[in-house]
Image (tube, rainbow, N blue to C red; front, top):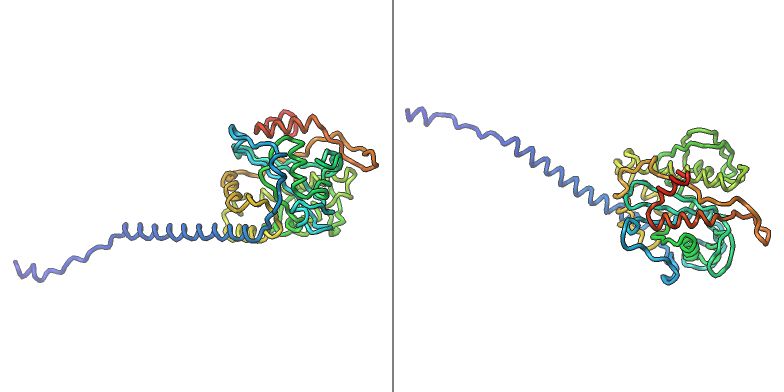
Amino acid sequence: MSGQLDNAVPRRRRPNVARNVLLAALGLVVVAAIFSVLFVASLARSFDTKTQTIPSAFPQESVRPPKPTEGPAAQAVNILLLGSDSRGDPLDTAEQGGASNQRSDTMMWVHIPADRKNFFLMSIMRDTWVDIPGFGEAKINAAMAFGGVPLVVQTLEGMFNSRIDHVAIVDFEGFRAITDALGGVVVDVPVPFTSVHGNYTFAAGPQELNGDQALGFVRERYAFVDGDYQRVKNQQIFLKALLNGILSPSTMANPVKVSKLVGEMSPYVSVDASLDSAAVGSLAVGLVGIGGSDVVSFTLPTLGTGTSADGQSIVLRDDAAIAAIGAALREDQLGPYLNAAGLW
């Protein structure tokens, strides 16, 4: 009996398959987490180091409307988006609050409500006749020339009696870079035209634009009977398509594409000091799930066109609409207002 026990073959210990699988899975999770942290940190560094900071984006606090401290409006975000074609004096002059011959060809008030369910883009016609503090009545895009970015902010905040939280300036060349980084942007062209900017012809209907074509699309106004009105509409269409491409799962789930997008876009963007990668990241997280249909664009209503006392062709402001939109912004009720006004 003992001999049989002595000669018995020892039982081989079975490997703990479940434990090994678990350890391997944990290892992959740790590696993925480290990669995610490094990737996000790399994106943040790219944004913070490549973008330009606007040294003087806002006017003195004493002339600004207060930011709501309670209620939904306290969590809403207002961003002034300016487009520039970099003509004339260096943009640095305007960004530092100095007088220059710079004028903004694109002016949009971006409103992100507290519930983060929509993204509102309000275009303001550049020839809108307004009161510019310290200079009297003039076209609104002259504010940049008179006193740089701070005066543009002061003018708009005074019009709407609402506070702007951030400012971003995008060089038109940035549209080219962003479009190419996405691999093209599909826009639905409402009115066929040929742009003098690159001599591109755009047929009516959906078509994919590359970066050069995108520039021709957003800059053209001479090809239209209503000039700047149609150009503003085209800019809205393009920005909605651009946001749709950026927010699409095929972009957001592709680290290489996201990295390329941030790297290509950042050099053409100037932002106020508080609009850093952390602020942009926070907004991006809140907007997860937003799609193209949730981006609402409209033009600030006007009373048509006219002529100023000194003979300039101008766009007549609609004071009633400005007052109503200002109240909607302060109460974070822009969506309901647009619905009631038939603008959405």
